[in-house]
Amino acid sequence: MDLLHESQYRFLVGDLCLLVDRKDRRYLLTLKPAEQFHSHSGFIEHDDLIGVQEGATIKSSKGSVFLAVRPTLAEYSVMMQRGPTPIYPKDIGAILTYGDIYPGSRVVEAGTGSAALTMALLQAVGDGGHIFSYEIREDFLEIAENNLLKFERLNRAQLTLRNHDIYQGIKERDVDRIILDLPEPWEVIPHAEISLRPGGILVSYVPTTLQLHRVWESLDACPGFGLIEQFELIHRPWEGAKNSLRPSHRMVGHTGFITTARRVEGK
Image (cartoon, rainbow, N blue to C red; front, top):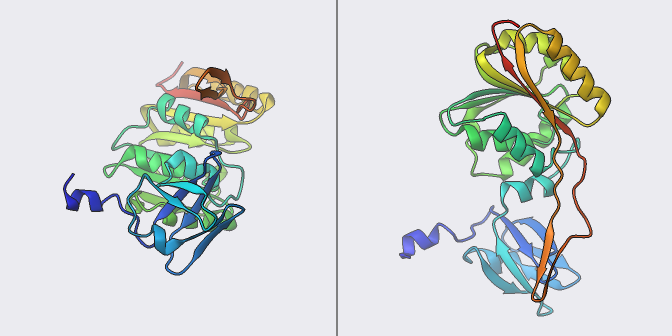
């Protein structure tokens, strides 16, 4: 690897850095000159991390070893500042896949919340796409903007944040996808029928079976939607060791239900 290429993977001032200890405990920090990271294992100078290549190990003042890497989007989404409870990475992955979020697509999202899903959508649509994200609460928008600013690899030019109640309507027309993470997504279905292009996909994410059934009823009653599918995902980690492989004692069980539907001419 040449020196110029190698320098792209070195930590700079302002970068996010994920420190992982030998027990897989993880700590997220933003690198700043003359600051220190403190834990029960001692402290580490930020200056000792700045300029270090990603994937390197570093020792604390007590001799404990930490691995220094940049956080993935999944890691950042569960460790960043929170407003409402963010959508878990397992569900974000399903929304991107079953919602068929592709490069260049125009996507309406509501609500923005802490921006975990917003960031994944931005990454998926790429430089040719655009995200229109609706959030009624100004305090949540402030948290979202702060989280977006810290995760610098995303192109903010492809994002429009709207402090607007999507229950009252959607400004955009002929969008490719609409993603709803709201208490009453059925209230948006009539607006989505108008805003989605033919063949476009609506995705709804709700935590309870009562909401799930209400979403199905509303979509089934709407002539502009068909191909309704509903499901949930369970995430079960496994732990490997030299002489064993077993399921983890902790798993991510139910978090929410996902509904997808297609915009059609009429049923």
